[in-house]
Image (cartoon, one colour):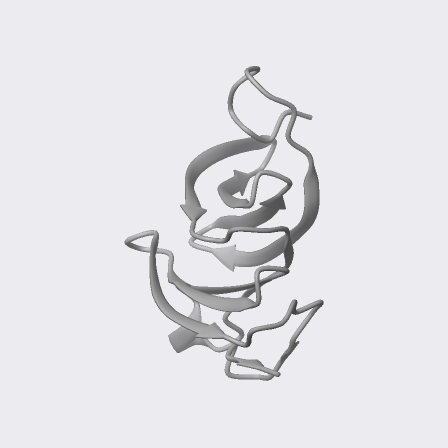
Amino acid sequence: IRADFSAKDDTYVYEIAQAPSGGGTALAASLSNFKVKLFIAREADVAPVGELVGHAKNINQVSFGRQPEASQELHSCSSDGTVRGWDLRSQQEVESLRTGAAIPKPMVIHTGRPVL
Protein backbone atom coordinates (compact mmCIF):
# COMPACT_ATOMS: atom_id res chain seq x y z
CA ILE A 1 0.00 0.00 0.00
CA ARG A 2 1.34 3.39 -0.93
CA ALA A 3 0.80 5.92 1.84
CA ASP A 4 2.65 8.92 0.45
CA PHE A 5 0.39 9.68 -2.58
CA SER A 6 3.37 9.46 -4.95
CA ALA A 7 5.91 6.95 -6.19
CA LYS A 8 8.90 9.29 -5.71
CA ASP A 9 10.10 7.75 -2.45
CA ASP A 10 9.45 4.77 -0.23
CA THR A 11 7.33 5.60 2.78
CA TYR A 12 5.94 3.13 5.24
CA VAL A 13 3.32 3.28 7.98
CA TYR A 14 4.19 3.08 11.69
CA GLU A 15 0.69 3.31 13.15
CA ILE A 16 -2.91 4.01 12.16
CA ALA A 17 -5.51 5.62 14.42
CA GLN A 18 -9.22 5.71 13.60
CA ALA A 19 -12.31 7.57 14.76
CA PRO A 20 -15.94 7.90 13.57
CA SER A 21 -16.40 10.91 11.31
CA GLY A 22 -19.61 12.09 9.63
CA GLY A 23 -20.83 8.83 8.13
CA GLY A 24 -17.38 7.39 7.66
CA THR A 25 -14.17 6.70 9.52
CA ALA A 26 -11.33 9.19 9.88
CA LEU A 27 -7.89 7.60 9.64
CA ALA A 28 -4.53 9.08 10.61
CA ALA A 29 -1.35 7.25 9.61
CA SER A 30 2.05 8.11 11.08
CA LEU A 31 4.64 7.66 8.36
CA SER A 32 8.38 7.07 8.12
CA ASN A 33 8.83 10.50 6.47
CA PHE A 34 7.79 12.19 9.78
CA LYS A 35 4.36 13.19 8.44
CA VAL A 36 0.84 12.20 9.42
CA LYS A 37 -1.44 11.45 6.48
CA LEU A 38 -5.18 11.90 6.91
CA PHE A 39 -7.80 9.77 5.16
CA ILE A 40 -11.57 9.31 5.23
CA ALA A 41 -12.95 5.82 4.72
CA ARG A 42 -16.53 5.28 3.53
CA GLU A 43 -17.75 1.80 2.63
CA ALA A 44 -15.16 0.42 0.17
CA ASP A 45 -13.45 3.75 -0.56
CA VAL A 46 -10.50 5.33 1.25
CA ALA A 47 -9.68 8.87 0.15
CA PRO A 48 -6.73 11.06 1.21
CA VAL A 49 -7.80 14.36 2.78
CA GLY A 50 -4.54 15.94 3.93
CA GLU A 51 -1.29 15.72 5.83
CA LEU A 52 0.19 17.13 9.01
CA VAL A 53 3.81 18.28 8.95
CA GLY A 54 5.90 19.41 11.90
CA HIS A 55 7.80 16.53 13.49
CA ALA A 56 11.53 16.14 12.84
CA LYS A 57 11.85 12.43 13.75
CA ASN A 58 9.74 9.26 13.83
CA ILE A 59 6.15 9.69 14.99
CA ASN A 60 5.54 7.02 17.60
CA GLN A 61 1.82 7.45 18.19
CA VAL A 62 -1.24 9.28 16.86
CA SER A 63 -4.52 9.57 18.75
CA PHE A 64 -7.85 11.24 17.98
CA GLY A 65 -9.70 13.20 20.67
CA ARG A 66 -11.99 10.88 22.63
CA GLN A 67 -14.81 13.25 23.59
CA PRO A 68 -17.38 14.71 21.14
CA GLU A 69 -16.03 18.23 21.71
CA ALA A 70 -12.53 16.94 20.83
CA SER A 71 -13.53 15.03 17.68
CA GLN A 72 -11.58 17.43 15.45
CA GLU A 73 -8.36 17.04 17.45
CA LEU A 74 -5.42 14.74 16.87
CA HIS A 75 -2.32 14.38 19.03
CA SER A 76 1.00 12.95 17.92
CA CYS A 77 4.18 12.16 19.84
CA SER A 78 7.60 11.78 18.33
CA SER A 79 11.19 10.78 18.89
CA ASP A 80 11.98 14.48 18.34
CA GLY A 81 10.83 15.06 21.94
CA THR A 82 7.51 16.74 21.13
CA VAL A 83 3.83 16.06 21.58
CA ARG A 84 1.82 18.08 19.08
CA GLY A 85 -1.87 18.89 18.99
CA TRP A 86 -3.54 19.37 15.61
CA ASP A 87 -6.84 20.94 14.54
CA LEU A 88 -8.13 18.62 11.82
CA ARG A 89 -10.43 21.27 10.32
CA SER A 90 -7.53 23.58 9.46
CA GLN A 91 -4.87 20.81 9.44
CA GLN A 92 -2.67 23.12 11.50
CA GLU A 93 -0.66 22.57 14.66
CA VAL A 94 -2.42 24.29 17.57
CA GLU A 95 -0.24 23.21 20.50
CA SER A 96 3.18 21.73 21.12
CA LEU A 97 4.90 20.38 24.20
CA ARG A 98 8.66 19.92 24.08
CA THR A 99 10.04 17.44 26.59
CA GLY A 100 13.68 17.42 25.51
CA ALA A 101 13.69 13.62 25.27
CA ALA A 102 12.25 11.08 22.88
CA ILE A 103 8.65 10.17 23.69
CA PRO A 104 7.88 6.52 23.00
CA LYS A 105 4.09 6.65 23.62
CA PRO A 106 2.17 8.96 25.93
CA MET A 107 -0.88 7.88 27.86
CA VAL A 108 -3.99 9.59 26.47
CA ILE A 109 -6.78 10.26 28.93
CA HIS A 110 -10.49 10.59 28.21
CA THR A 111 -10.24 14.23 27.13
CA GLY A 112 -7.92 13.28 24.31
CA ARG A 113 -5.12 15.34 25.84
CA PRO A 114 -1.76 13.59 26.24
CA VAL A 115 -0.36 13.01 29.71
CA LEU A 116 3.33 12.33 30.04
